[in-house]
Structures are given as C-alpha cells and as structure tokens.
Image 1: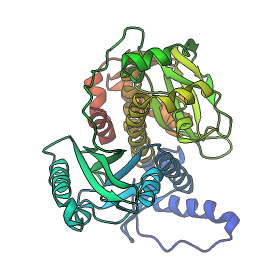
Image 2: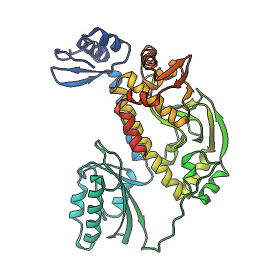
Image 3: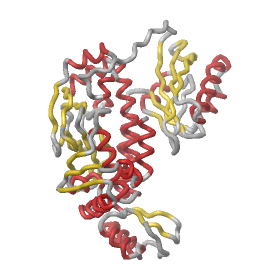
Amino acid sequence: MTGAPGPTVPAVAPDNAAAAFKAWLRRLVTDTAELEAFDAGEIDAVMDRHSVSALLLPEAQTALHDSSRIVLSAFDALPGEVCVLDAKGIVVMTSKAWRVSGVAHARAGLDVRTGENFFAACLDAPQNERAHADAVAVGLRKILAGAQRSLRVKYACPSPRGRSLFTLTMAATSVQGPVNALLTREWHGEPKQKVRRVAPTARVEAENRLLAALPAKDYAQLASGLEPVTITYGEVLYEPGEPMRDVYFPGNCLVSILTPVDGNRALEVGLVGREGMIGASLAMGAARSSVRALVQGTGIAMKMNARRFLREFRRSQALQRVLLHFTDRLMVQISQTAACNRFHLVEARLARSLLMTAERMRSSEFHLTHEFLAAMLGVRRVGVTVAAVALQRRGFIQYRRGNITILDAQGLETACCPCYRHLQVMNA
C-alpha cells in the first residue's frame, strides 16, 4: 500500500465509474515498484494521505461485500439459538433461531437483540430471576476477561409456556477483535435428572474429526449411509446455484471454498479438510450451493446422500452440536480469510495458504499450480509467480511445475500475516 495527496474522486457516468475510480487510485501510486505491484494485481487498496483512509479497488469492494454477505447468511441460517457479543457485552448479531425463540417465549429469560447490552439485560431481569441473572453476568465477565474459556449456566424463568428452563452456554471466540463471546441457548422442559455423559470415542475408521467426535451410537447410525470415495485435485463438488445432492466428510483430502467475484474469477474464502464437511449449509435450509467447492488435495472422503444426511441431522442432537461447532469455526475462517485476501500482500497470503494446506493434508509436499493459487488468492498469475519465487529464494519452499515442498515451516510462518496465528488460536 502507498499514499499520496490527491483530489476528490471525479464524477463520471455510472457505467464508467468503476474504471474511472480504479484509474484515479492508480494515480495515487507513485513508487515504480509499487506501481508494478498494483498493475500485477498485488495491491487491492491504496492509502490516501489527504483523507487518511484506505481506498479499496472496485473488485476488492465487491469481493469483500459478497464474502460478508455469505458469512451473515450462513450465521442467520444456523439451526441453533446463537448470540454474538463484543468485549463490552454489546450484542453484535443473533441467529434467526434466537430471535424466533425470543418471540415465542415473549422475550423471557435474557432475550436480547442486536445493539442491546447483555449486562443491562441481566440487571433488568425480574426479581424471581435475579439469582440466575447474576450468575450469568458473573460468568460472562470471566469469559470476556479471559479468565475462563467456556461456561454453562442453567436459567429458569416464567414464559407464556409456563415455567421454562434453558441452558446458556458462553464461550470465548477470539483473543482480539470485535467478536469476543459466543452464547448458545438450549431450552428444556421442567428440570430433569442429569444424564451421565459419555465421552466421544475416537475411531480409526473415522478419519474425519467431525465424524470421530460423535458418540458411538450416533456414528453407527450415520455410518450405514456413508460411502468412501476418492475426490481428485481440480474436481468441482459444487457450483454456485447448483443443487447439493451429496455431502462430503474429507479424510486425507482438502477442499477449497470459493465465492464468485465476476463471470470469470472466484476468490477463496475457506479451506475444509478432515476437521469438517462440505455441504453443511444443507442443515441450515439451503438446497443449492452459494459457493464453488473445488478439490485442492486428492484423497478419500466419506460421501452421503443429501436426503439421508438431513434425516440423520434432524434425528441426532450430537450431530447438530458438532456441526454447529464446525460452522462457527468455518465462519471465523471465512471472515478472516476474506479480510486477509483484500488487505495483505500476496507473499504473506501465499505463505498462510500453504501452511493451512500442509496442516490439513498432514504433508509438507503437495501439488498446486500457478493458476490454482491465483484463483485461491484472487490475484493474477504473475502475482503468484513473484510471491512463490520470493519464498523460494528465502529457502522456505521449493516450487517446481506445481509441486510444492515446504522446507522450513517455521521460516514460512515468519513470512505470514497475523491472520495465520489468529486462525490457529481460534481453532485451538
């Protein structure tokens, strides 16, 4: 990024506005090396010293808007009741299920909406809920202060349905940033006896972590509908707008999630490997894919018919829980990756992407062509070439005809932007 004083943006006809704005931004870039990077697609934003603000290129604005829309739509479609808070306890957003449930219970039991303060809701709780509300406030302060990672609190309250009981689960979601706590609400009937929880059993045959996290009974029911398939590099599992007829649980393979930017280009916003699944939006009511699912690493995945998956999802609360957890982590990754792809230099973004690929493939050697990397990072092929050569000269990687070997993982991590470490913390 660079900067220079400049005039206001000239007024132009709507059809030529994007081109004129880009041309105006180009005039702000004065350094020769930076100008070459701008023309190569490595710079997507320019700092205007006159206004002291970063100015995004039209393509960057469109991609960031579309990526944010996908994240918000996916969150609003979550089957569980979810509420997101910032560091001060202000509600950032709530899922549709949270809002619908609040209406059904006449907003009883700390039902908050976007923009409201959760601590204020605790203070305003009726006298017969005071003990529960105080316990929630104390627990939430511990979560936001970093003294505790997660906490579950039982809460009883009157509602149009009689005396209702729910469990409020509070969890820290990030070390820094606008999102600091994730709350989920599970309604119950009258208090029941506690059921002894059985720890999930890891299975050799369930290489996918999402499947391995299921209790034995739930996994056995699901396994009868799973079919091992080999998905290969470059294979497209979903296209935007196409029906999702099957879901996939990757094992030793890797799938790239791309969102279309225009008719010819797409930008990678997420990677899914053994930690999750492809087609999770089916459980949120979507019948068609909003993204392109492109296989980035050849390997084995467990495949299941979409109708069978939906039946099992409705039946199994354990599957609902692990899928909600995965969707939360994927949303964080999509948000962070979208911002990273727009604001950080290509070399740092490439280093991050290579490390994330190696972690999910559990291998320091894999195959990625220049064209594939360019599509992943949303830049021109020449930008990928320059970045790959730079990393190779520093001795971090070896790159030849699409075959990549990570020679120095620690060194490659030093070349990454802060997004890589942030995603590691979140996944931990």
